[in-house]
Image (cartoon, rainbow, N blue to C red; front, side, top):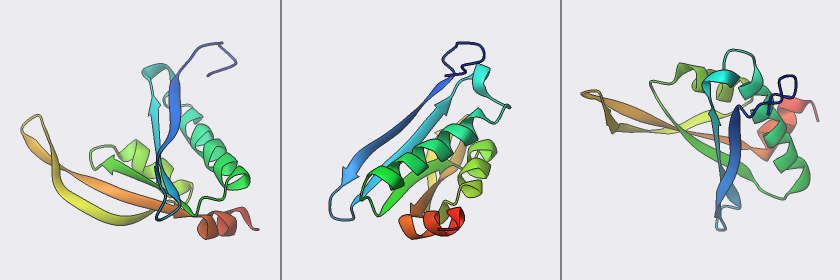
Length: 115
């Protein structure tokens, strides 16, 4: 929600609980009206902070397609690190695109926050 304009600009979701690893998946969708203003970074950071302050999850995971440099930048900026790459995961406009699997641990989150 962009409160300055009172419009919905995207969504942030934590889903797919993995009981064995005590982790969940993170995903975000920012629509055109929410881009290029730092709202995705802010929403990502707020959700991550909320999760690690209010749950006992060990880590968050996500996948991002290699053709999405904006998302990759945000995820790295908030502390996610590349865990693996699924090569040629998606065919898009005649090209095969890699899916990058990333992870943020509670420990790394604490370090990033200076805790």
